Image 1: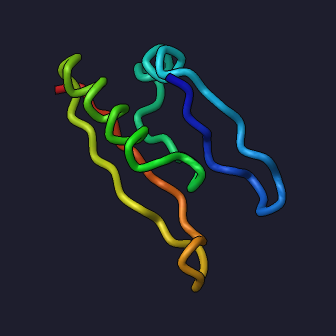
Image 2: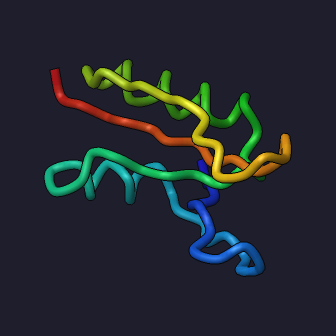
Length: 80
């Protein structure tokens, strides 16, 4: 499964990352930011993927502007 990471600037295109790559990065990093172009269904699948592997996963929307479409997803993946 591929997900789009949050953009670094408003006009930049989001970079994609595989779930397996996220899993490899977990020993050194536990907070990930994903772009608004990811569907809620894709993020729920990400949460289920890691919960099945024994992780606690927390997701929330982070607003960075006043418009409805100005947000990113913040996902915490923590080992139990």
